[in-house]
Amino acid sequence: MRAIGLGMGATNLSLRGCSKLGGVANSTIQESFSANRNLTSKLAGNLILKGIDPNRILLFSTEGVPDYAVPFILEYYAHYANQKSPIAAKNLVFLAAVGIRTVFQGMVGYKENNTEMAQVTSQCQILLQENDRMRQQLTALIDRVNSATMSVATAMQSKGRSAFCRSLLSSVRVCSLTCWYVP
Image 1 (cartoon, rainbow, N blue to C red):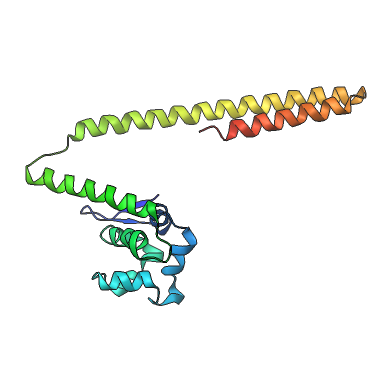
Image 2 (cartoon, rainbow, N blue to C red):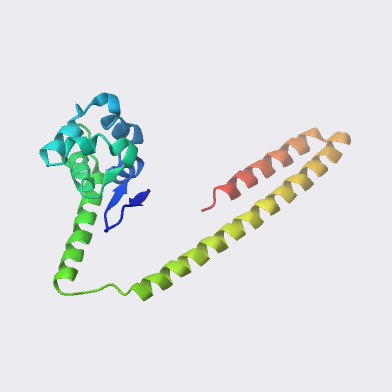
């Protein structure tokens, strides 16, 4: 999901991000806000009834969805769409809980410890860099194994052991594919 910071605390969420939060296909939400729909979708109509400026809705497909409109989109997919989404309902409740917590914390004067948040962010960046380094090492190792296997297979094939070579190459391909999909 991609959120775009607009300054003053305002953010926009991409339509793809909205589709993930709503548990619907990206094409479904893209179609609702496509320029040729001209605000005729049920979702756009629902947003207009909630007080969202129609001119702003026309910009969702190019500029993203403003943070204040996201809960209404989730509400639509959770309760009013032809195919209701349990994922949208779950995320709507989650975001409501986070929002209420933020409001209550503001009421009692709670301030987030930015130093602690910076440390966590720094640690996350270090872990991501380490993950990238390890993935590069794994890729290099897989390439070496593939190269060595091809050499062995070529040598075995020249000695008339084709069935063994096919089995060996198949095993290496499965191993390579498995390694690529490890999170």
